Image (tube, rainbow, N blue to C red):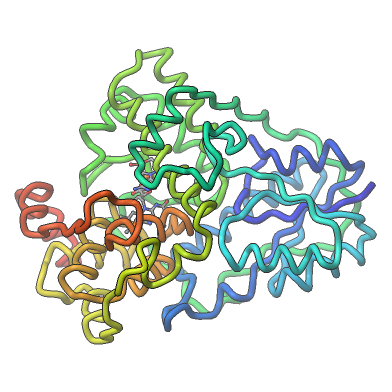
Length: 420
Ligand SMILES: Cc1cc2nc3c(=O)[nH]c(=O)nc-3n(C[C@H](O)[C@H](O)[C@H](O)COP(=O)(O)OP(=O)(O)OC[C@H]3O[C@@H](n4cnc5c(N)ncnc54)[C@H](O)[C@@H]3O)c2cc1C
């Protein structure tokens, strides 16, 4: 049997359960990626993908295509509506079925349903650290507070080993469809900023290199818990861009954390990496439980939300608010596509609680600019900060002046991103 493998947010060959299953079930597999044309629309007036994430995505696709070509396979890359193009490609190549891995999001689900009306699709549940089928509760009973979730899953923890890298894939000759050039997307390629924390090279190989680099050093992973709230230097793992696009799996990260513990001994920091990956899973499960509610203005609490004051929103986006700490973080974001977790919490709190602006505008701005944009982590964290999600406290307002004094005591970070 010949099938299509539809890559979405799983741009890797190592530990790719969906692709492995397609190879096991079918004699011939044709790998495909479609740039959904909706990416080039706007959300609440904000473009949906900016130059930083686009660059990262194009590099990741080029890396995947090269890896597949080395196996005498290929990757067909097209731009358009997947609901039209996937069934069309299947007919053109005589593929009887489509395989893909889970990609969260309401639009992704709608598109998948449209494809399913025209051709059988097997969607493999993946993208989590914990296998959802072994959770000690049904998804409707997911605790609404993270700590309760963590305690329950930690009691009977079992994380599966990552699958080995795919070394063989039987693909018939397909027409040459190279990854499109940046210029096709009517955006300019971003210049690397001299103060960027990282180059963030897209692709599985670059992600695995980053994983090795961070997890093989007692100075990095071994001190993660002490450094993770930093703003300058190598304060955190920076795994998120590769995780968001599926170039590296959470299981592969945990395997490296275990290797680190075997070599240097477990400590609070190696545990804390697992703890943060559990947060990522938690927000994925929150989406599974609540679906589109996470995109509604009232979130999970159905409370009134902030204003659509364009002037205030623009002052925040352009780093021109009354708070220089917020401005510095917003400048770093627009110039590099990156912001620390500490920065994200502060700017989100400021937009919602100080400026009184609708949190969804902030989430849309992050979606546009973050190199690591991920639907569940982004919307879950915004809801949390807005007091409309999974925070047991009713009002998580950050005092940005105190935060600045604590996390940027000499003003080094704020100066750096105010003058650049
Ligand atoms: C308002 C807001 C929006 C956010 N939007 C995103 C987003 O679109 N994509 C995204 O990946 N993360 C998002 N985060 C979560 C977090 O800020 C980033 O995951 C983290 O800063 C990425 O850096 P790192 O990989 O060095 O993280 P590390 O501190 O090294 O953590 C390791 C991994 O744990 C996971 N993780 C850590 N913190 C969180 C968290 N709070 N929520 C979920 N997962 C977490 C990430 O996968 C991360 O790569 C957001 C946080 C806030 C407050």
